[in-house]
Image (tube, rainbow, N blue to C red):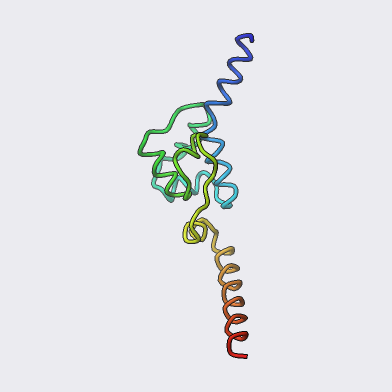
Length: 117
């Protein structure tokens, strides 16, 4: 394998952390800048990882907790694990939370009607 191919592979491996953070952010419909603000990080601090810079242990743990995933998942060592309903709810935007509230309300009314009827 030539040096150019090695560099491309190395670059892709180093950006696993950033790619995983970005993918989770997109699934939760949040921008990287919004996440940085919510966590109190300086602007573009997460974007700096796209060049292969590794996060500190503290940053890795903060982001893993924020997204409800394991640190191992963020660095590409483990598969995405199941998250708690509360964590999923916290990652929703307000419009999605309202929709979820309506779904839960309709579901609970349906259950009550079945049990009372």
